[in-house]
Length: 172
Ligand SMILES: [Zn+2]
Image (cartoon, rainbow, N blue to C red; front, side, top):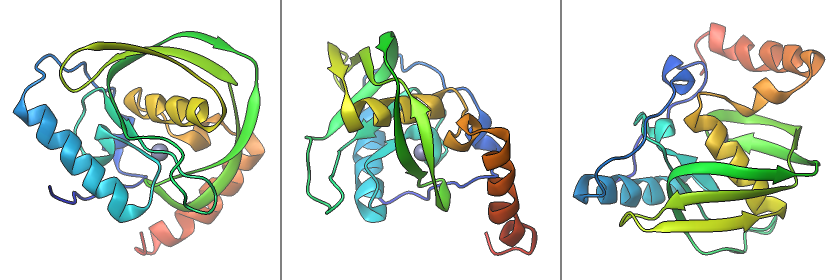
């Protein structure tokens, strides 16, 4: 397993729409194994394939509480589709591709998702709480969307100012 490089905003690859996986083969398994190693290495709770530069509809999740204790098993999610969504919730989010920026984001409280596992078996899940939020954040990545794009215009301006200042002088 290899730790791959995580690409960060404003890298344009993060705007790409990922494509469905068609072969559940050893290349997919290698990608999933490397993504897990990369996520562990960087201390995230979720990672989409595009964050390591691979435009495929693949994401992984392994949730932790605020003290870093694991609260879910590793989930390997291929070609996910949200089939229903309910309610509204707000949670402070961050992203491995947007280092050092955290902000409250409004999302659906509960989502039902169908996806395939690494062998192509169909799985369906109803997610709420942090799992629902993490699914929505990672599925946004597959659609080329980053979490700050869901902020109000004012908060987004604040983000652009704070985040892009060091980018312009070459620190990011
Ligand atoms: Zn992210």
